[in-house]
Image 1 (cartoon, rainbow, N blue to C red):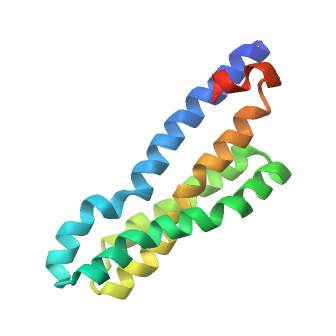
Image 2 (image 1 turned 45 degrees about the vertical axis):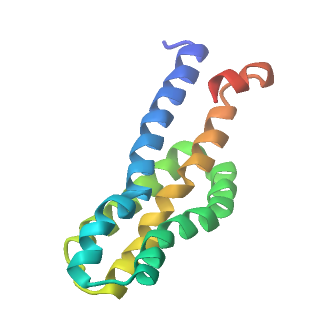
Length: 135
């Protein structure tokens, strides 16, 4: 049987890996946005909106994700969050117009709320005097 400390550190490690994946998803438009800008002939304003859309969604979704983490637990919320970001990533391959990318960007931005889920989840596994080390 695994010790409590082993479980706690496995939560930290898995949360860190999930943060990494979610952050890559969240900032994806900053990387693929340049080819999209060229392909669609976007001006600077449209490009800025495209890149900012996931960031805005990620900022706004943090409060509900934190409440859901408190209510349902971090593991299930993290799992559902990562699962729901797979669908918009897949839909990017079908996007052909600016508004398609904006809609996909709204849903991709949910990955930006992963930090809230992970911090709340990890904090439960450590006593207060060790939470700073874990996070």
